[in-house]
Amino acid sequence: MEAVQVVCESLSTNVDMMTSSNTHSEGGEFLDIVRGPYLLTGRKMINDALATKIVQVMRTVPENTPKGTLAGRGYTGVQELPGIGRVFVKQYAHGGMLRGLTGGRFLCGAKSRSRAEFDMLEAVRAFGVKAPQPYICVTKGSFFYQTWLIMEEIRDSRNLVQVSREDGDLLQDSMKRVAEQVLLLIKNNVFHVDLHPGNVLISKTGEVFIVDFDKARFYTGSSQSLRELYLRRWRRAVIKHGLSPMLTELMSLTLRSYNE
Image (cartoon, rainbow, N blue to C red):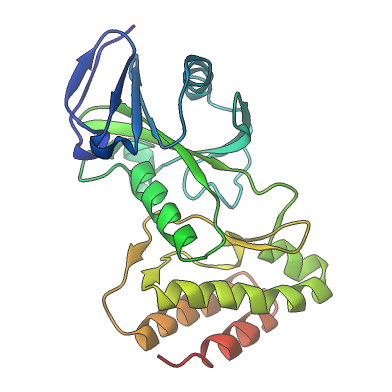
């Protein structure tokens, strides 16, 4: 196996390994496995069969990968993993000009992109927000790294863009629940920097899920200013993509009824 030296703080400790090994972080909450050039980190127990399958997935770039709502600026593929089942595998990539220069490679910092989103997903789920459950972060590299997040698949779902174009009755029923989820984010000072109708999923049973928490952060301003940020971002997306004004009207009605 090729050796790897991991130097990011978020990737635990500096290691130089030729074989697989297991290390527990302080408190035993996270399990790290280094397998060849890949570091696997997660709260779920990672056994040999699962680690082997994940490495196989990492080495195969899917062809004609759909740009799903969980994909962000990277790609997303659905995989079947032993002990977990069907999952989304999200690879992170830069946008704009950087994408042509560096693709999916990032400069090491305090946290890998996948670990930051993993932590935020756990946080918002603890607040009661419906979001995909994160399972495992995967990182490859040292000074520059590639990274993936393995998370729950929201099966048989449509995003709010699709619903707005296909099912007006479901749209009206769903928007109040969408706004209630956004209110939970506001009340807990979470700024989802890329919240738009494409990042809201409606399950087959009508449940609403907020997805793509890449770059989400905790907000230090007032609840009212955070509410206005959400409304402006939402309104711009609705106008840009020619969606039903009802998306903005119903979101605004619920959010503006909230008083700090």
